[in-house]
Image 1: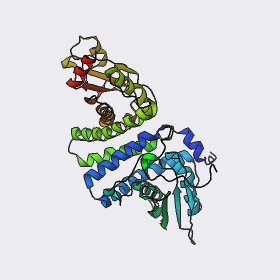
Image 2 (image 1 turned 180 degrees about the horizontal axis):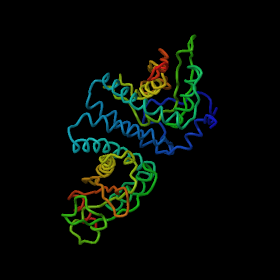
Image 3 (image 1 turned 120 degrees about the vertical axis):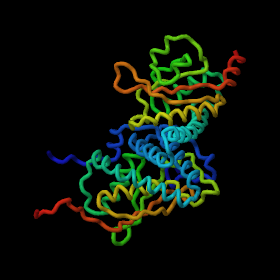
Image 4 (image 1 turned 90 degrees about the horizontal axis):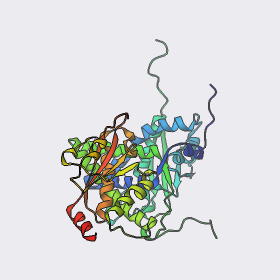
Length: 186
Length: 206
């Protein structure tokens, strides 16, 4: 069977079942609130959000690959573009832009102007160090790890902390080649 | 000029204009998020009852905010003061905005005391009246039960309780699975039991 052509983010988003973004936003808010009540330390909450995101990411990648028909990305630049244009659109309904590539092409920034996770949110003074959207960094990290890329993801800009957009710095640490579960010469 | 430059920064989140509420995310994004919520809570509790309570509490917070948002946006800040009014707000507006459809049936249910626990819907409608403080929302395909776990209805029950409580109609809200003859999947029923004061107030208002 001939491979299917990769679909654009909009096409995939139009074909999946969708729910109201506000339910999503409010549910996420409830999660963060629960974590803050249980864990109390802002750093712990950040870590837990990242872990939750990681758990989501390792499962999300399957669905992403299945629905979007993207072929294997040639290099990390293509990967970043695909995440920004297809990945974000398919799940969150918004697109990100990729900027600030470094010289080796292993590190870039994903910028989100519109973020459904943070509608109606304001950080109180007691939680200033909270990376509210940290689940996103976990999701990307988890998803990329499942396609053999180890990455490190940090927040550069956060609108909740006064900046003008959300910026995630994605750094490719190493590409782990796929290991076959059995040796060829057996 | 229109369209030039970045989005305007608002000093206060309350000054930001409200969206029209048409934005959507994919169902699977919500499903992933919800399953993480359930899984996280499973690590924090020892038994199912506590898990349901925590899910309900999470839903409560959502419900309180949903009421504020929808009251302002959909109803022009008009406040419901009558029982039927608030129930109708829930089964049409709230359900439509959050879950994209109107619930199949809202039965003004009159349960006899011993039929309260998880009994057949059809059965109970025929019996006489004993409890006028209980109402039911019956939903065939509850969004969160797509996940397959029993206790997810607790989240929705929490949302309903949050809406009712914040609107001044304190109630106990629970979710039950009600098996229906001839259908594979049991129907989820949200049972709402209003507090005494609500009924007294309602009676006073005529």
